Image (cartoon, rainbow, N blue to C red; front, top):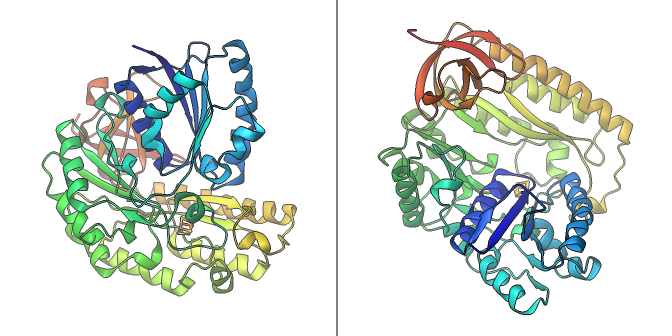
Length: 438
Ligand code: SF4
């Protein structure tokens, strides 16, 4: 063993997966994970800059880590991911105690970069975009799958959509899809390792173009022995083909929930965001999906206070929420991201107004979520058990195929299994039930 490593992760599931892969590559090179910063010989911040908050958090955390570097001068401190991509070697110029800056296409070089630093102590920054992203092909070792029965597969990266508020195309690059044969091999390997749920990831997952359509990829993964559930995120409404919608009717392993960000309900705002659909288009999609799979559950991202958003535009957003009745909504106040087109438009909705609209939206969404949950009381669902409940050692929790969390009394050895649970109570963000037949 060479020493210990700690990686902090910010942002999305894609970043969580990259972190699993980074730990896995470093473990193979002799570096073991630790949670103890005093013990760590290497500390990385794997960053996201999609929202302003995580970006600010990264900068303040780097300042905090300087203390560890002063106490242990040989500590290797690095920044990876979106903020690294965006800021590049400026990070090292601004914060000379940082040793490594690796952009989103360069993460596979991590073990090699650490060797370089150990040999020369000269800081390195690599942020070139490449034609392929080798990290996507790294399969994390079983020990880094958490929970062991759920595995994430990165099938594509980047985005060509250039929504006017979003930094992703600039920090993740253009869309690059992995060949479907590699994805299928990975799904089989992960299933052999014990993964029962396969979660396909990509910034724009349903525009996948790795030799077959995304719908065909789902069909082939549906045939992989050992896989019981398939999920994917994040989808763009404009890429929801009829063939893909049909998968929700025809593929028995494809879970009946979909994360489909809509961002705004006003056609004028949607156009300013460059989203490529109207409210009516979005609602038509939801209708088609519900026709294909009547028990479909939806989640989405939405923002309030995009520049020029009026009260009437905001009411259009509220109308869409009433129509769809999402299970979960990730809602945010708009904040300009430097480098995007929207950042050039005056941010003219006041902070107080954004807060007011967000509070109205979140209050209504909380009601809808619990109303949706109440509709599930008395029904029996298949629940894949994820872990021990935080509230009681005698209880476990898992997810329905809709991705709703269910808590129920049961032993630890149910983890990783799927059991039938009868729902007895609806909670604000979860359900409580009893194992059916007990
Ligand atoms: S689809 Fe739009 S919001 Fe999503 S990653 Fe691409 S540019 Fe960003």
